[in-house]
Image 1 (cartoon, one colour):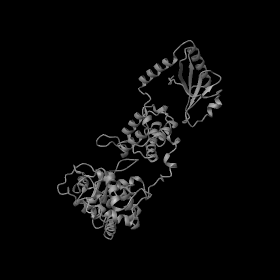
Image 2 (cartoon, rainbow, N blue to C red):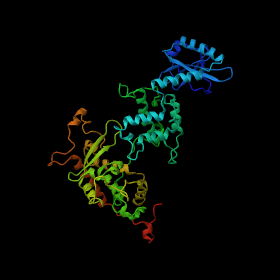
Image 3 (cartoon, rainbow, N blue to C red):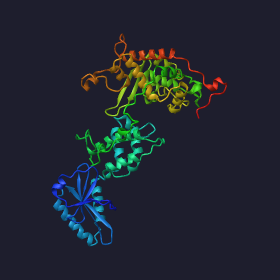
Image 4 (cartoon, rainbow, N blue to C red):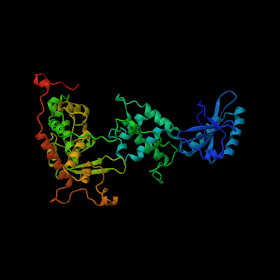
Length: 478
């Protein structure tokens, strides 16, 4: 017998319960139905198909008394009515069945050590389980939660302290509708959609739903929790969100932008950081030359640059599912020359960041720098990840094999598109063994570097800022 939270509820449906009715009962949200034949008896039906018998009735002094009787069909309808009749007599005689039921469940939980956890506790459990194999759940070096947990806790903050088994699809839908982004934007459908996508497998793991239905894959003790697939994805009906970003810089835009991707940083960008200390524009050029993700560049240390081999070793590349993956990316001659031109190259130490801020730490404040490049190049509506897409688009135009492009982007293991088994991947060494044959990835990236050089060399020179032409000092980006 389990206690229930006793509170006033909205009027529930009423009808005479029958076995046939209970067998066919299906609901889209948690629903309570009162039995008209036995006073105080009700059933609580869940979208998962679970049906629970409960009792609820006011005592002689007006207190609402209640308890869970059991789960159907383990407890039959006739037995549930008999229990409800017994409880009705006890309540009318002044017995506090709610308090006794609560003590009973507390003793039961203490005995088996398994209390119903909150949503926050389930998220923490999943994080501990999945962080070693899924980068989006891995904590940062400063101890901050990974991207997935931060997004979930931001959107579903109002539900974190609730018992996870008591939350309904309606609760989650309301939390998504009511979320207000900290950025102040009018819509947060993209952010909410991402949080929903990250939370969905957490609840599947908790309930042993696919892909966690096999023994040993799900949570040690499964719980009957809601399936988030029963909630609407806000991004699916947002006309602004098309599901796939398709922005790449064209020839003219690239010609203007490339002239600003230098070190020292062009003074016309007007950054607060001194040009000699601002490596961010040159870092953007490196992103173009390597098709790397910004996070990979920020985390790059000098030990990851295998100078003698011309390889960038990435200890971890982005993965949403499956084990952690590494990448050894053969660099183009232009990318190698760029690294050797950095001010920290001669006195580099293995643990130092390759692209540092003015104090030697990781780069930041990318948005301010990007806006300045937008302004000075006359371009708009692109961000750093679009440089990666732009480079991949150029490689496609150069008729580079899609398989090679995918290897450079580190999207998939190179054998997965060839109709082979995954075990084949274990037979590939990470290095390039044939010195007399250029690595296809290096060859492709050399072609990309040549194309970028041609675009920059033949681009019209950028006009001087108006402030400089008039003899005024260029303004700072405040």
